[in-house]
Image (cartoon, rainbow, N blue to C red):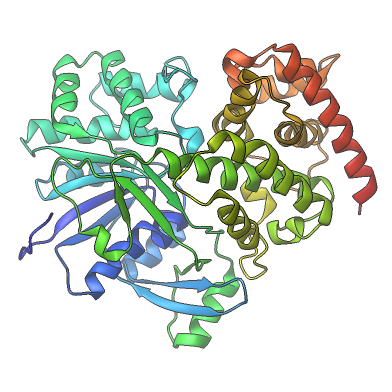
Length: 468
């Protein structure tokens, strides 16, 4: 555990988005509020964007307001001041590299979305992916890159050069076994870059704990700042809002110390697996399915979508009949967790958009949905409930292909040419089910194809019955 120091230790976070500021920063703020100021946060982005937010945060000294909303509409406001250093973006990532190399930086955490890791089902890094290939060239020239691997490699290289000491790398994305997988991708990246000395140093002097994070955090809209001003009298250029619920479960494998997070409500555990599986399959998979379904019948927000009886029913059926049985036994009351999750999705004050939740389907199918399909088929069990989720995504993808979505679709893991080819195929169901990015070893399974075809027919009937 950390000891009190006159100069705080630092957790450097890559990805200065709303989720980090409504989640990880909140837990550290709780410690600071309790009198433990032994840690602080530095943060910045590894890609351009968010210029107005970053400028506002820098002008405010990293301080901002968090609005939280309960399902019954109770709003509360918290001042978050744990973010002490806001690193402006520059293509060289010089500021982040400098901060990461400092000896008092002991943790580098990151949120780059589940689609940002370029790993297949066997944790093999796709070194041919354009962004990875470009970053490998930069790494061979001693430069930082735009992917999490390119950024971390530059930080670790400089830290090793300066003898900055061991470092914990903490993944905060919705990725199964996220620490293990992020580490696997990073080591493969460094090896492909040809830096044997850094590869050995990274193996010896870093750890990557697995972690599970949970808090619904929509992109803040201008009315958040207006409410903050009305409630607190503070003009805030970078407020965030989130639901009241918050959870963080972390494996206690930190090589260079950590904040006393357990005193702030973090669950420090030996193994995160049961919490991770429950969250990914009961929350993340269901969240995506509701967003795809809601979009298909003209809803803009998740809370509107889950209140459509047929959508609530299909979500409940998937969780109860297909997901929960393959997760038991569990230390979690999964049925109670299901009910809490669906209630959270129905919170009208959050106004989380279907567009945000529907993104990155080519990462969500293999990460959130395919494992339940795989395990049920391995047991000889039907997959009617879980098959509805990929069937909804295929219908959503076909409307994207036809230019009929009401919003732009973003998918870091999808090659647009592949998406269009699936939809333009003589039999889109077959093309979809044979895509190895989506299904790995399940690709081409006749049982999968048959179940998706039947689920697709149910989806089309659902759309016809609920068309706006």
